[in-house]
Length: 546
Image (cartoon, rainbow, N blue to C red; front, top):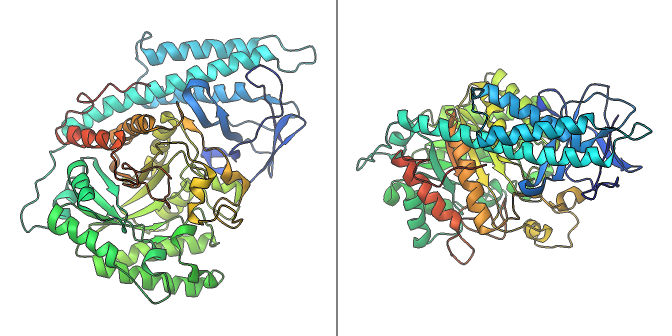
């Protein structure tokens, strides 16, 4: 068992509030565990005595309310000091990335290094400070460790931003300019050949279709992504409605000359599955046949217009449907191979939901994201790349706020599979998201069966640096895109939704309000795309600071 003592901001030992806590094992794979508060300490019980790390949401001062983690720690009878272990991990992460990114020669007076040295000094003082007469940690140690943690987060974000600035400038120098679309030529053919240039797009809402949205998309993005949720296309079994999807794709291809990406086509999340499908949840053979027919129908219909398919998503979470690991890989292989047969020229992406893997602690039937990716890679499925959903600031599992270094490290972790990466859903809200906002999926705040029925899903998702606002959304967007676009293996970045809608993956996460007013994030998107197209970013934009 792991046990952690926690001090509040006044330096008093307290019974901590447990928020978004889960355990991680080797290689940052989430592991099943029971985590609770007992006798004023956080205690985590797991199978076996292997070392594990605790991740949970904490108030990190000026850095925000973030989900952070400790290093791998062995079981012991004596309690750990939470603030000290969180600071230890962030200092270790900084040093690892300093070496991995070949930045060890960074001058000592650089803001990232000077801030880091202050953090390391405070951590050493906390580690060596005199303990109480009973050997317990003291208020002084907690205060020093808390300050060290806040400085270490700030230093690591500065380092991530500096690395992004350097790598993005280098990437844009060697990238070819975006190709012009020739009249009568399929727009996706030119765009897909432009492999070294990071394409930036946005997911549209099929039921919102106006000239104003057309103008925004044409000016600000390289491509559009059309969602193809099974629950919307086939609300009743055997009765399909493609009208809304048809008009968006026809506009993009015929008028806007924008490449069209489609999907996820087979999304196994609760909101994307039609209700009638659940009668087959315990009959995999029938479920597989229904999925096959659905995939075949959609891909066949749009194979002349869609250039890239996000063909399957949410398999690793394994909820609400519960599949065996064998069935997960079989369904993934089925989806990829079917597109290969029906649409050989298309790119095929397998999407990873909740890439930090919080779901694996609470749901023993799920598969950690990195492990699922490895299984897909080793199965001979051969997708053209993996897609990652990085949606922050919303109450559901996987939506906890995280800092920029965590985003950068996550992308690096998935690069080991030697396949292109696509950020298929990047998102953050423009105002704090409440449980009532996220309850839009049920339409009934009193419904105890909706996506926020579990207490853990009603928790504050946290925020980055400042509580979410239109300005902080735009600032976060700038840094997040810079980090993702700087990675040479990231080929595209897609914002999760254009407009605020009642039912959304990230409530208040659109670039326009429900009334059609432009948010600061939309102008920032237009500036970023223009600067990347002219190969003047990051110089053309405000300096990237930690």
